[in-house]
Image: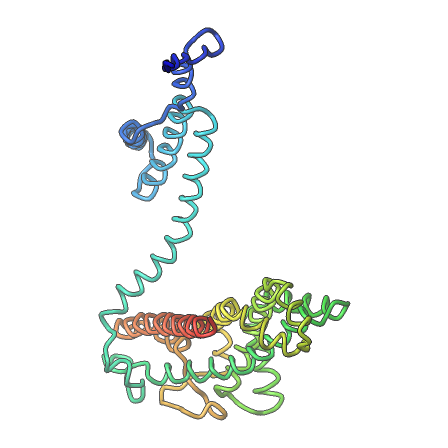
Length: 364
């Protein structure tokens, strides 16, 4: 018996009588290469230069802005003509998203970069280990040691007051409260979030400093800072606790674990990373506050370790006072103090994130 190989069947013609290979080539979308896109952007820059020559427009920032706008228009038009409407819209959306990202990062990078540029020259070990005691307005010495100690003490006391209370409030409105009381608490927390910092300082100044005759102190400053921290801690903790899957709670309840133990052992450890981030955001917000400190801490050129009595300095207050001086040495100290303040916030945030990550890995 002889076996005959089957004859290959040709591809059926597509619509219009054309072969399938030719038809599939038509389905391949056209693509704009890098060189045509670069040429379109360079043409946009050239048009911008021509516009600036024949019009009163001037300035580097204006030239860059107009060039970017014309480059986006040119690239989108080229993509529309070659690749079609859908690809052009996709390119435009991607470009707009990237532009928004750069617009958001530019002020942050600019502030940090300029602060490092102005403050690094004055920053030294002596600057970090000396206070302003006995330093005249034209003296080049002095430092921010007393401001660092004051800031750390005030923020620590404010955190001890606001973080436990804010976390308990968040637990109540997410795990227990479902009626009018929880709604009222959320409303007041939202209202407190928008309170200006000077209002918190005025309240503590009128109640604590004047009415109770407690005087200026680091504790008074911490009380005003805790008022600002509390709503941030509550809102961030509430949102993080809401993200914990309900199935984890149900599994714990099914094993007979009481609600308080479930919250303590299941809910809070699961949301600990987000809660830590929210707490650090609150700390970062109040660490740089100046207005409440003007009315509560008052300031002190000497190192004052007791936050319960007597005026106390802080880094934001010190930066504000030095920046208001007319002398270059004071301005240099203000920039170095601002850089020190940014460094402290970054170090606190990194330490908190590392501690949270370590605890998460240990639980796994």
